[in-house]
Structures are given as C-alpha cells and as structure tokens.
Image (cartoon, rainbow, N blue to C red; front, top):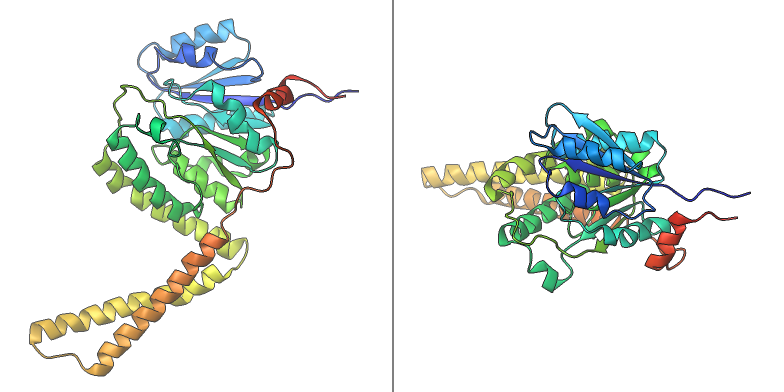
Length: 336
C-alpha cells in the first residue's frame, strides 16, 4: 500500500502581466500539483494568455475577476481554490517574473522539516543582491518592515513586504480569509493573522530580482495610507492573542500603562500650556504628578513591548535537515 506525495498549489495573482506570465508559469517545476492563476480584472491580453496556458498545461486553473480587487482579493480567491482541492502546501508567486521558481524547494523546506507553518522570502540578507533593489523600494521596505513588526509581533521577520511566501494547509484553513486586506497591505495582514494563530514564521534568504523595473511604490502615499491599517491590525492582534486566546501580561501591562501614559501626557501638557500662557510656574506637586504618571505608564508599556517580543513565535528546531533534492523528491515520489 502506498501514500500519495504531498501536493503543492501555486497561486499567482495576475494583473496586466501579459508579457511575463507565460515564462512564469512555464518555469514552475513539474512536481507542482496545481497552478491557480487569478486574472484580477486585467484590461489587456493577460486572460487570453492564461487561457492558452490552461489549454496547454493540465495543472493550470484560471479564475477571473470582472473588476480589479487588488492583490489581496486575487489571493483570497486563489487560496479558497487551493483549499477546495486539498493542497497540502500553498505558495504565492507574483505574475511579473520577479520571483524565481528555482527557489521553491528552499521556500518549502521550513514547512517540510517542521520548522515553520509559514515561510517568507527575505531579500535583505545578501548585500550584492540588495544593491539591485531601487533606493525607493529599499527605503519603503525598511519603514514598512518596522511598522509591520510592531503590528504583527513577528520581530524576527525582516523582509515583511516580500510576496514570495508559502503556508501549510492547516494554517491557511485557520485564517479568516475574507478579512485579509485586499490591497498593498495584504502581506502585512496575512502576517498579522498568522501571528494571531501563533504560527511559526521562517525567513528564507532569497535573491532580489528587479533589474530595470521601476518601483510603483510611492513612499508618501504608502506612509499615509498604511499606518492606520497597521494600527487597526495591531489592536486586533493584541486583543485576540493576549486577551481572547490567552490573557497574558501584555494585556495587564497595557491596561495599566496606556491610561497612565495618556494621563501624564494630557495632564502635563495642559498645565505646561497654562504655565506658558500665564507666565506662572506650575506647582511642584502638579509637575511631579505629571512626571510620575508619564514615567510609570511608559515603563509599563515598555514592559508590554518586551513581553510581546519574547512571546513572538519563532521557528522550531527542524525534524531533519533536508537538501533541495530531498525536498523535490518529497513531492515527486510516493512512499511504501
């Protein structure tokens, strides 16, 4: 009696990728079980090319959105299809040719050897490859990575904006897919909801593939639109992770620290304004009260941050070190 090899579904969000998409799909190795290409309301020949590929390759399944829903909307459609066919592992690859199919074994390795439930590419570890990234994209990634570390609690994950990622079926089923962000914040929200599930996330070194392509990232626009969403995701994570799933000291520290910190700032700021406008120094007791409540609140919030960092889920020890060849063999063959 034999057991089937695990299945891998690759989900590709496609928007205006008429030129590169054929090469992207044709580069996927033969052991990939299913290729789910989601045309996200493209206005040129992307869907036509995808339909041609679907006719040529039995693994390809094309889904269409009449209107553009954003990368998150396309991925949710693809994720649901991957779960419907029972894929054991689900990988996201963009349709613009900036992610190398040859890196698939390394991306899947942490999931196969038990280190992680979620693996993300990391372009920040190789200085030579990093030099290929435009300055705008590099600055944007650094800023957004820090903000997402705060929101997700995944402090060890460096390149949070990297869209080359893989998840286990178990983790994906636990995700509230319809609540994921549909636009540029998709990867961030996916990471936050993975953290809520206490999923171990692994960073996998990847080469940066950009060439002469100009980044579409607009730093000003992103820094205005993304932080409010990250604040919302942070509040959701703190409540679900540290209150609902497990009432931890993070919630206790924040419950005491935030009111004290706010009171110290408002009370002290108000009396500073009164003193500045009237020319009369504030009483010593008023100054001490504002300072003490501010410092105590700050210390408690700092303790909450420290505890949150310490409780961040880390990759586990691998059950077995696997080479790329062993990873490929894991998907190609059956075991007696």
